[in-house]
Image (cartoon, rainbow, N blue to C red; front, side, top):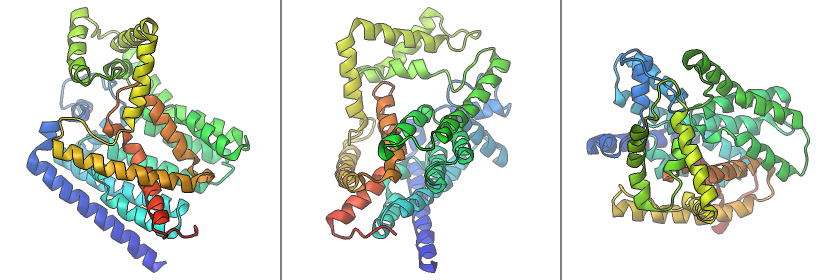
Length: 393
């Protein structure tokens, strides 16, 4: 027990050291300015009254409130303070997923996974930015740990509590809004049974609680029911293409189109999203085969091992080689884990995100929620190939 505690302390220190080093490199290279970031710091300043009032409904709101809390704590709109907090969150996420790995992997594979998680470049890369991934990954880690600890069959009380947590997670990043359907489907498929179905219904109900409350808040404040955010239609049309030049150009064209058509209506916050949703529907009706090619192509692109510009060729080659190796080992691990119902939530999440990003905008960033599970599978695959897999404890 003591040796295990020392091991996890070592993992935490390794993860923290890797992220502090990454933050130092990030700041020295000025990468926030070069690569950009989502407008969460802007929304945070609006929430604190440091900027004129503006609707905080374009993106899911939880991370904006989180950043506002950090700004309030340090009494300044310090981007570096947020990044330092994200370094801590990124370290916490490593520990959470390492603890999950200890529950679902053989002993040796779980230790390999823990060390790998601490050093995984994708998890480290997004732990030092202003983006919402670190907070989201902590929530996801708590969720999968809680789900595994809840047992089978899931009790109604625990199901509802996990659902409420999932709803907060969806208000942090909306990609998991429909995860309950994929999760329940994967669990039923793995067990070949509907045992405990009332708890899964309560989980889904709990999942909708936080978005519903946020939607009610928006009815009171803005006169419109907006349960997550208003950028859904935008991100749908923005990413509905396989043409790399079109991907680069389309956001600028869309902004010009919004201005030209006068779609930015302060009395109707959903107007832009509805317009681009309809535009996507019209394209699908007019060009069904082209739309099908885009969806299938984007599903493959979601799983690509390489990254696109603005990253330099050396970074793209390094990422391509790393993720190719990760995928090969993860496939071996997935074969080893087949039939284990504890992995059903992971298969459901993979299906959820693949289906979502086959339609909506995608980039390597959006595969981050799957990275811890891919690392765990790869660790299992590596131990199997090297003959070091041991019976689960």
